[in-house]
Amino acid sequence: MKVLVLGGAGFIGAHIVEGLLAEGHFVRVLDRSHSSSNPKVEFIQIDFNDVMTLSEALIGMDVVIHLVSTSVPSTSNKDPVSDVNGNLINTIRLLEMMKDNGVKKIIYFSSGGTVYGHPQTTPMDELHPTNPVCSYGIVKLAIEKYLNMYTELYGFTSIILRPSNPYGPGQRRMGVQGFIGTCINMALKESTLTIWGDGSVVRDYVHVNDVVKATQKALKSDQSNIFNISSGKGYSLNEIVEIVERNTHKKMDIIYKDKRDFDIPEMILNNKKAEQILDWKPSIDIDRGIAKTVHVLSIQANSL
Image (cartoon, rainbow, N blue to C red; front, top):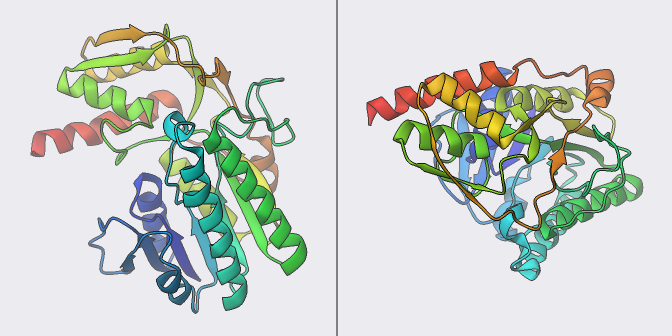
C-alpha cells in the first residue's frame, strides 16, 4: 500500500513510519522539519499550507495518515484564529485535494484528551458528549465533522483515532506536551520539574508502540469509524513522578504552581470499541512503558 504520512517526522509520526516500513508499505512523508535519514522513505519538506506540493504528493497514494497539528492544547486558546487557519482550513483544503486526486481513505489523529471536555462518565467512550474547553479540541472535533461529511458525500473512508496521552522514546525533550517525557528528562538531568496544581490531575497514558499497532489495524480496515486509543487506566501526575523516580533511581525536585483553568481533573478513555472492531488493545502497561522509555533515554543521554 502507498501511504502518505503528514507529520511523519514528529514523535508519533516517526514511530508510525517505522511500523509501516516494517509491514512493507511504500511511505511518503511530508513534514516541515527534516529528521528522516531512512533511504526507504520518500521525504518532502514542506509546510502544511503548501497547496501545490501537497497536491502533487497525493498522486498515486492509497491512503493519507494525518498527524499534523500547528497548535497544542495549552496554548491554542491564546490564538484561536491561527488554530483555525493552520489546522481546520488547511485540512479542508487537504480533503478537497484528496477528492480531486482520487485518494479516498484517511486516518486522522484527533484528540482523546480534549474533544470530550468535562467527563460525565468515567471512563469515557466514543459516544460521550463532546464539549471541548480549548480551541485545540474544538478544531479537532470540527475536522472530525468534516471527515464525516466527506464520508457521506464523497465516499471517503475516514478512520478517526483519538489517542489519550502517547509517550515513549523520541518524545521531544522539554516540550509543551508530554508529561511523562518531560518528567523522565528532568529526572535524568536532575533538574526541577514544574507541576501545575497539586499533582492530583489524572490522565490516561498510552505507549507509542501501542499507537503504532492501532494505526496498523486501522490501515487494514475499510470502514469509517471513531476509536479511542488508550490504556483505559488513569494515573495522577504524582503517581507518574513516583514511577519515574523508581525507574531512574533519582529523587525529583518539584515546584507546584497554581492549577490552570483548562486542566480537567480526570480524563480516562474507554478503549473497548477498538478492541471489538479493530482487534486492538494496549499491550504495554505504564510501569513497563516508562521503564523502556527511561532505558532508551538513558542510553541517548550517555552517548551525548
